[in-house]
Image (cartoon, rainbow over all chains, first blue to last red; front, side, top):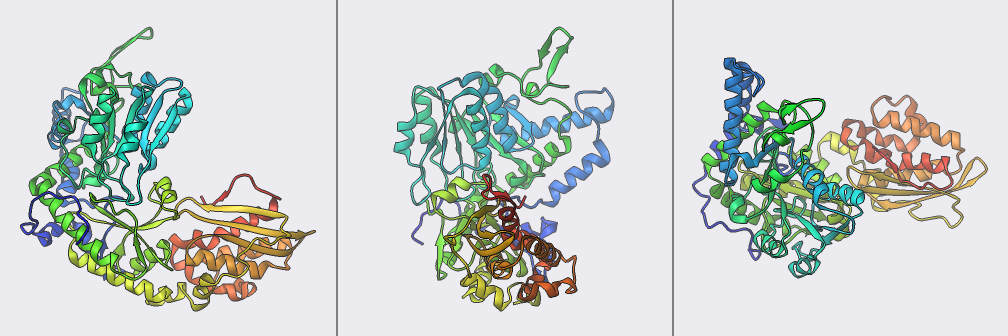
Length: 418
Length: 152
């Protein structure tokens, strides 16, 4: 294998994948008569029994509104919600649980920062700096902000391998730059960005950095304090948790200064018709009854992966990605899209003579689920001069046999269209 | 191939997708529209030379999957020489065919395009088959559209 992919230094032999697969009830089924091979975890991961059970248990035994009542159920629900926040804190190594804000997902987290921190700190002529590999969710909220404030969106280019051009990044950092927003891992290319370097350069210019961790959180150990980022966002459903719940991490001193996002219950200390005093972080940003079951489910998911060990998961997925890169890359007419030295989680490719959509349909009949399309990253597609790619993505429950099935399915597709 | 897959990717569809007919912009074109499927990024532009109410010449360009290319290619062959009303009626019949609302009954009018009946077993692919037709409809209505017509 010539391409060095993200290294963790841990062996993966210790993981009992068959046993892990049994933790995911959905995997035990056939699609069109074939064993399901799920290679679309970058879109959303499957949920282990532990997560499903935690949600059912909550609704069957503890359901009540939080921070509202003195009755037993409300106390239990509040405690479980607080515990989930603490689990998230521990998982990303934040200094304080108050720095963890529950949101609907990475998308809402970025919108929250753009609409609060952004509106308070970005003015006419100022600049917001993003990268050419961002998901639409880390482009459009900044475009909306820039349009409102007559500010400029600047984009750091990527090279042909799909790696960030750090020299260009350094040059684009200007006295007008107010915030940098960059993916930890690209959802379309798998590129792992050199975050420490990015953050170090931005901080040297006193510019805060928001990291979109949606694609990194299931694959790599994350330590927000070691990274030094100002904001880190992710979605629960990409890391084996339920949909509808996500996390915004922010440094407490920055969060405390930010204006509120939405108004409503729970985000206030006192309300009169003349004046409202806002609650402290994180509650200031959590108006209304939150997705309590979602937070509890996310907590269960993070506990589940922590028990397996993020280092071991990273090593296992690294092994799969190396194997898949070699096998898929060796097929005739296949061009890999995204060949960065450091990659995680996804393998994007196009096949000569077979449109990704047709490939997706043929693979589906073999029971294999992959993503086809532009992956909500149209600028990335434009950069590589293609309308779409096929993307196989890996999770802890995937095996080399899954990759073999993919390769076999691709051979069949090639035969149909040859 | 499984039988359903075989029905989707019939030989005539594969053949048209590899060598699409009328894959060009006719020099005499006086109507055009761009179609876009935001879910997959497929694009299709339909050009028509309208002579009064009749489609005198038609062509298309764009990038898409086998189903969308073959559908566009065969559509141009089918509607050439037809009136606007006839083309719109054919679209209606084609739409019923690929969404499974129509069993062969009406498909007689569609001639060779009846091969797209297999699409009805693949709901995720209906928009691929109809992209060119939506674009045709838009091109028929306006001389030149400013915004691409979307499948969404």
